[in-house]
Image 1 (cartoon, rainbow, N blue to C red):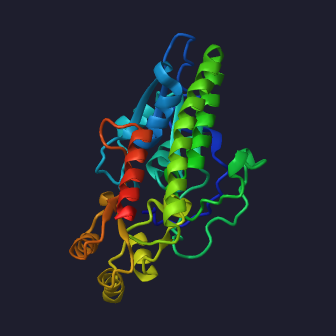
Image 2 (cartoon, rainbow, N blue to C red):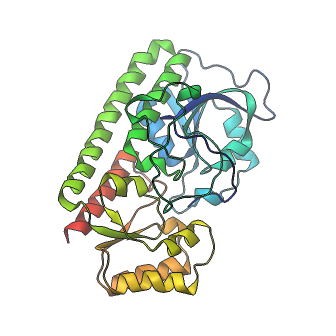
Image 3 (cartoon, one colour):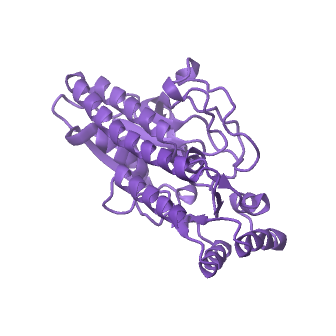
Length: 328
């Protein structure tokens, strides 16, 4: 789901790496890490924390503000303890795009090394409002578009960790920032990023296999958290717009919208239902129950990592679950 406040959102530039700092911190910020120190990194969620850990290895100390696999980051409110952790970090990594506004509310204007996956602040979701990928990205610091992902506008959906290209780019930018702080370890950070990206490329290959075998198959989503994976797998999202627009606006769907999705499920218009348990409501639970009664596979696609899993393990398990449902 999405933050409901409306403000201008800059199109994705691969990522934004900027000088952002904490309100209330001293002008100098935290002490720079020594050549043998672990670099302190704070990430908004365990998703990005896992990416940082893969790149930094034993050279980083990573803390994720949200690690609870059942939490909804959209509604999270930061605590003074969170602010203290961020103030003490050498590098801050966040999603952006209005997803983890608790981070941007803590961050201020003084320089601070930051990697942000989506440029801009809060916005309303445009999940069913047309082409989300036709915009021109601003590029890093407003310059040239970043790498192979130039032209992919994410201003309509901020769940960009399901876009595996973006995860590549975040890993590269994290490696670059860590290398600036400890130049002697820069090559190791780059090598770690390359190894991680090879694993992510393997995930991309698996999604490509789904696209080759199941292109055009219809699915229903209770909330478009995995929009970019659905798109890459070339599946056809047939969720009634009246339903998903209400869910995204955090309002109760109208009786007509509920009837629309129930009719779609009862008519077995979809081969699978993609379900986000972290934004569950009585309405979405009813959708899941209806799918179960019609023997339509339900695939859980979440927003944060299960305890003890890495990003690659988590995403691999979700791809496997989706592939299994489509093969039924």
